Length: 82
Image 1 (cartoon, rainbow, N blue to C red):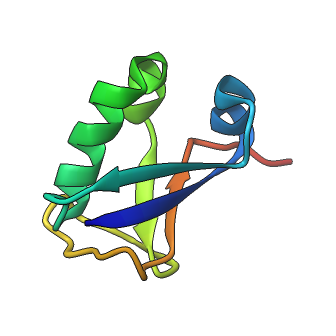
Image 2: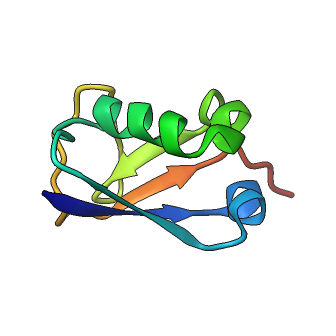
């Protein structure tokens, strides 16, 4: 079992009201697994999850990227700058 800490930014942070989420699970081994659990436990994030990208250890991750609780995980929404 492990606890995964997911950092949140911008609109995601506002939606949740916190700068991170913690998910405890035994069966998470890839970013795809993590996203499936996020969809289950935080349905309010569904619109955001379609547009956002996961980063693992400061690199954008693919669906099959392996993860463990020691990874730095961030959910990054689309942003615009000026």
